[in-house]
Image 1: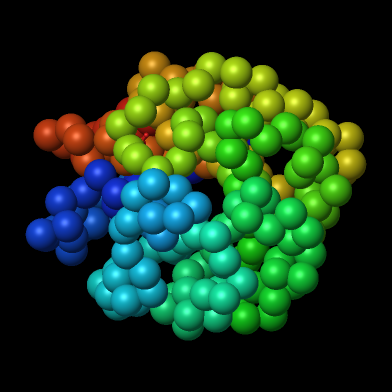
Image 2: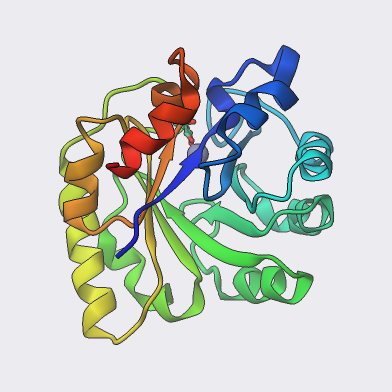
Length: 215
Ligand code: DX5
Ligand code: ZN
């Protein structure tokens, strides 16, 4: 299993976003873009306009993480903006089949996200319908928080279930991932590491990506 790293631009300097992205471009497997609506989470970030601007400056795949109350209303706008992977929360859409297939027909690969308090069983029925499962390892809304250790048990249990069902979708982890927690997440079964502060909060973001990947 090759570990992939997705720098989260939430921790980048937005006054020079292009320069920030260029720093990680040679090593990043994809970029992670956090969309927050101030309702589903207590913070507000950006919408399709910024996703589209990032799309224009880099060919790196874009993983768009919707932390919004009504993702179905905006799926088309984010697909048009250039999302390669479009993820929404199971807590926002408890019956996600319709939106998952809508996203797929719009172009992006669909994925589901689970908050720390949501059990793995809630995701089991939909594993065959998603291209990626993202497990929040902090409460969503802000960067630079500490990983909640119990969430890694959930990663391991979902991984086990994926194997048991003969599926091959990757698990991503998001929140509090740094050089200390990354190996724990990987041994629990995470294949994609999303990290903001541990990359853009350092003097050498490119080296930080390499370090997280473990080389
Ligand atoms: C948090 C976001 C994360 C955030 C992670 O709500 O979903 O993507 O950027 O930040 P770090 O890596 O700093 O914990
Ligand atoms: Zn995120």
